[in-house]
Image (cartoon, rainbow, N blue to C red; front, side):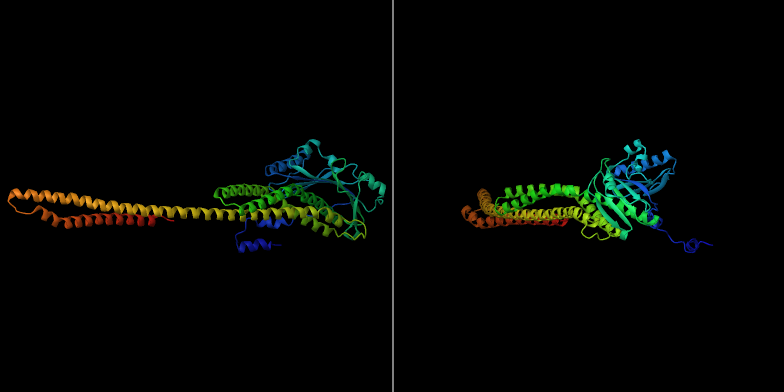
Amino acid sequence: MPDNSSSALSILPLQLHPAREALYHELHARPFPVIASPVRISHLALLLADEDRERDFQHLRNLCIRYGVNPPADHETSFHQRFGEFEVRWERHLEFVTYTFLRPGTNSLPFSHPTLSMLPADWLQEVPGQLVVALHLEVVSPEAEQLDRETLAECFEGQRLVSGRLLEGSATLWSAFRLHGDGSGRILLQNHGLNDNQTGRLILRVLELETYRLMALLGAQPARDLAPELGRLDQQLADMITQLSDTEGLEEERQLLRRLTSMAAQIERYRANTMSRFAATQAYYQLVMKRLEELKELDAGPNFTLAAFFSRRLTPAASTCESVGSRLEDLARRIERAGDLIRTRVDLKLEEQNRGLLASMNRRSKVQLRMQETVEGLSIAAISYYGISLIRYLLGALEPLGIDINKDVGTAIAVPFVVGTVWWLTHRIKKIILQDEQTETASSESQDPH
């Protein structure tokens, strides 16, 4: 039978998007496992830094080489393979990686021989990342005997249990949701008639429920630590605003602005360190609530259910992260507004000072102008005096030549002409100088881009 898609592409040679194959592969990257009961599972979830991602991938390949198994291809985000007596499922998420180890169960006491004990000890010790989730999950087959209170107490080391009837009564879950003596959590599932496909989907949802629960709680402690600090900064900001209303001096307002800038830098540091964690907490919390809905737990009446347990214990932590994140954003906005207010006050006072300085300079300019006009008048008088003196000497030199002229009369006649000529020349030179200054000012303003 011919490949219609290939023939269509040959007829219409369209340009393919480089991520086209990845888009088709995305929906099938993490398929639901098909798991038969009974089964024993060990599940690990580790936070990975960016520099640990390649090390983790290489560590997984080393395990494959040790057991003679084909390793995953480069850039794979999930891997599933059988390693002799057990299976390994590996998945890479945005900030963490999960390892799930499965093997068929036995009739021995649950959690007595966890699958994790079959892994090489040296390989486990070198797994990169920070361990967050370590969980042993066991599924008891429908044919097994019903678990009594004494058996459950022995399985969970006498800790108080939370129980739920899942998938409308098709399975029962028991767990203390606490760490046990081996440093791991424990979940026990009693299968009441699920097939292998249903069992695999239920196990996957329960593992995701526990993983996302702990990942969501990673933001709770930073939120609790940050809340008192935000209260202190909030009070400090209120005191600064109150102090601002009583501040008159420019230097005091500058000091307030420096303190406010330091506070803003501290808030930005808190935001950088916590906001991504708080956002992740909200995302994980929503996933936990979604998985609880998918478990279809039966109402147990007055008994404590899984939904009630998670709602009571997890919701306050998620709400705390959301509240602290909102307070952090609100404080950042208030600091910004307070900074704008102080900068406005500083600018107004600087503008007032500049206005006074300009007025003072204007007064000085007027005084200088008057002094200049006075000097200019004296200069005209002095130059005219010397000019008239020269004319008088000239008239006196004409007498020996036989030219009869009265020096006093000639000098008196020359006085207005000399004074007028000196005054005209002085004002002409002054006008030329002012025109040159105006031309230079206009040229500099036209060249200035601002």
